[in-house]
Figure (cartoon, helix red, strand yellow):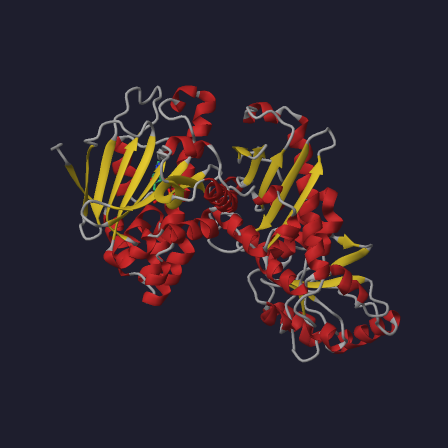
Length: 621
Ligand code: ADP
Ligand code: MG
C-alpha cells in the first residue's frame, strides 16, 4: 500500500463535475476527442521541447497515442489511452487536473448554469470539457503520468491521480507499478455501466475517425483482436504489440491481406484452427487534409479539421485551400480560414491577437504558430492559417526562420489570398458576404484606412447604411448619385443606430430631394471618412456642417438673394434669438435646409463635428 494524498477539488471543478454528471447522454462522445486532443498537445510540447533539450526524448522512442479497451478482472469495461508526450510531475497532476486553468471554462460554467439541461447538453458539444469529460462515461478515472526527463525533472517518478465521479476530492500517489510508462501519460477510464457501448473497438475507431483524425499529428493506434484461421500443426505465435506497432497497417489493406492468407493456406492445409491475433491498427493513417486535393476534401472534413486545429467549437465562416511557390523555390500548401467570430480582445488588446494562429509546418511537422507580431497587418490578423512548406529544413528554428526570405514571401502571398478570398465571397455569395460583414465590417474599414497598398480592394469591401438602404458600397453610392451631385453626403453620430440617424433634422431636406446619405454610427465610420476625404474624386461632405450645398440648387444666385430678403425680413427675430443664445451658438441664420423641423443646431463649417468634439472631451488630457 502506497501512501495516498487526498486533495479537495477547487470549487469550480466541483461545479463543473456536477454539470458533467447531469449532462445529456447524447454528448458523451466528446470524451474521446478531448482526451486525444490532450495527448496530442502533450506530444507536441515534447517535440518542441526536444528541439532545445533532446534529453526529454529518452524513455520512449515513438511519439504516439495508443488506445485499448478491455474487461478488467472485476468485469468492468476499461478504456486506456496512453501517450508518450511530455507527461506530468506529481505537482502538475494536482495543478492541471485539480484546478480549472482553462480559459474557456469559466465562460462555459456561467452559461451552463444559466440555461436548462437541454442547453447544457448543446454547450458541452460546443465547448468541450477537457479532461473532465472523462466523467461523462467513467465512474472512476486513473491518470498515471511520468514526466519527461529534463534539467528540471532529472529524476521523474510515475504518479497516479485518481478520482471518482461522485467524490468531491481526488488522490495522488506513487504508481505501485513503478516507472512503467517510459514517458508520458496513461488515462484509465473505468466505464459506467450505462456507457459500455464505448467498450467496442469499432465504436472507438468510428469516433476517432470522425472527430479526432485531425486532432493529432501523431499516429493513433487502436488495439484490436481478430480471429484468424491457421493450419492446425503450425504453432502460431501471437505477434507482440511492439512489432506490429511498427508497420502502419491500413484498415482496408489489412482486410485484403487477411482474405488472401486465408485462401492460400486453405489450399495447402485444409485442417484449420482459430487463433486470436493481437493487432494495433493505425487509425489516422490518412494524409492531412491540406496535402490532399481540395476536390477530395468534404466540407465536413474542412470544418472538423478547423475545429480540432484551432480549438474553436464554432464552424468557420469560409475557407480557401491552395498551393503555390514562394518565388524563391519553396513550394507550399495552405488553408486560410475565416472564423465565425472575432476574438473578444481584438479591439481592446492589439497584442492579444497578433497572428497567433498562423500555423507553420514543414513537411507536415508543426514548427511554430508565431510568425512574428507583424506577420499580417492588423486588419487581417484574425485569420486562421495552416501553411506547410515542402523545402525548408525540418529543424529550422523560429529565429532562423525570421532571417529567411520565406517568411516575408509567405506573408505577402497569404495577404493576397485573404483579399482574393474576401473579394470572391463578395462577388459570388451575397448571403455569405452578409455574414462576413456582420463580423468583419469594421475590420474592413480599419483596413481601408491602414493598408494603403491595398486601399482600393479594402474600400470595395466596406459597406454603409444609408437613408435609402441597409447596405451600400461607395461605388454603389456613386452609381446612385443624383444629377449634379458632386459630394458623398454623410451624417456621423457615434453610437447612434442607422434608424435614429435616418430621422435626424440634418437629412430632412436631402431626403426630400432624393439624395442618399451615409448614416455613420460607428466610431470607425467617422475615422474612415476623415481619412478618405475623397473617393474616386468625389468629396465626402458632412451634412451636419453649415454651408451645405446640394448641387441641384435651381440658381445659386437666386437662392442667395431669396435668403437675403428673408434674412432682412426676420432680422428682429434673428437678433433676439441670438441675444438669448449668445453663450452657446455663434450665429442664428435663416436656412433652407429644413423641411419639417423648425430649427436645427449645426456645426460651424470649419469647426469640429459634434461627434469629434464628444470624442475629444472624453479623451484623457
Ligand atoms: P486544456 O487541454 O484546455 O488545457 P484540459 O482539461 O483538457 O484543458 O486539460 C487540463 C490540463 O491537464 C492540460 O492543460 C495539461 O496541462 C494537462 N494534461 C491533460 N492531459 C494531459 C496529457 N495527456 N499529458 C500531459 N498533460 C496533460
Ligand atoms: Mg484539453
